Length: 542
Ligand code: N01
Image: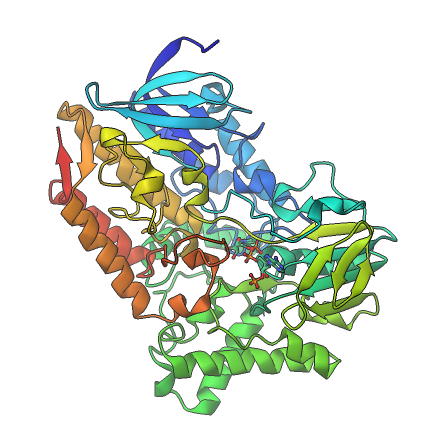
């Protein structure tokens, strides 16, 4: 029997960092809000992705909330790149510190959200029977929250232990003396492989597409350095939010204007370029791609970056044939999300690790005992799927979302996602997508983008409250112009050449549209702020 309808000002879907902060902001505005979360705890992606070696690829001191100075001063990150358990502990701390749990319903998946045009409210239903009426419906569902299970014949026949990286068992997995296989070589696998190899009896990696990976140069943070960094925290935060790049953070005690060494690779002699790349390689981290300003724009600069990494792979991996298989040749570096690793390439020098090139000979099937390639079965006790996500749109389209005239979001996005600012969709009034397609989202430090969206939204909702406005909706023309702008920026880069999940290319039948906004978090913030200042240009209110 369906439950009685409850009334709130806002429903928030998801209790990851976006949902937590949104709840906090709405409460401070005096609004009533309820959060639905399918997991049994907060943390979102950091709740689910517990595979060995899981950690963030943004600097810890940048991948954290900036809204509370006390919180940022009190919380002590232990490593340059925080581990999954530490980030999850941080999310739990935030939930407790701001007393957020009392408005979160756990183990509760939202099934549908239907807009009532007469009342200007959303009717939201959960699988377990909750029924909510709310003026605002805020999707904080994450960009990488729907695991992509590969369509490989026989997967269910495997008689050993089968695990998906993004749905890792809470009790962990013991690989001791086990024959382990990993399918996939994206960020998740690249983090997990070195850790699994240390423990497993034998590890076989099934690689279809090699990825570029740069060393993390992770390490324990020096408390003295942290204290100095934190003394300048406001200036650092301003850099992350308004800088040219994507807000990933840096290691400078004195915050500097975040700018590339040179805007174009062509401005440098070959020796200068090599020196710059070497310096970024030694410093570590995803900011390698920002060593020169046009790495993701100029084919020539990009090739120089790729050649540099190929040379590093060849210098690291002892077996030249294995090194060649690990060298990505079919996409520009950075057009697929650059990976950040600890000892990934070195792992292939271990006697207990084998690489199987399943681009050359595709996986034929999974049998009860292992993975069959080219007629041979690689016998395994444990098989790990690190095969990625139905990114950016997956979580939204799994729900039955219906806007004006009953049009579904699935229909609206049949040819790929369209939005205004990556925050709203024409025809879906009072519905917001935090870090949605069309915003910097996955190209950026997610915490920076989440805070920016939540703050913008909170201000917008406060504006509506003060003006007693019942309904906000993106105008079709504003949406079309924004989509054109997002595409124009993407098409000026090498991103669309990557065949990546950024484009939906990893999911059969998904439209190929480059989904994130590639213009940088600073430019994006400026645009959003200008929209608000200009009386919410591009929106229609009622
Ligand atoms: O997923 P992926 P991921 N047979 O899609 C392969 C974020 N993240 O979970 O490229 C064989 O990148 C697939 O091969 P191919 C980060 O944004 C962040 O690793 O399709 N192989 C690919 O190698 C990242 O980009 C962090 O040919 C198959 C792999 O599986 C995003 O999450 C850590 C296959 C999937 O790679 C996703 O990363 C982890 C098949 N049938 C993740 N199907 C950090 O913060 C798929 N593959 C550091």
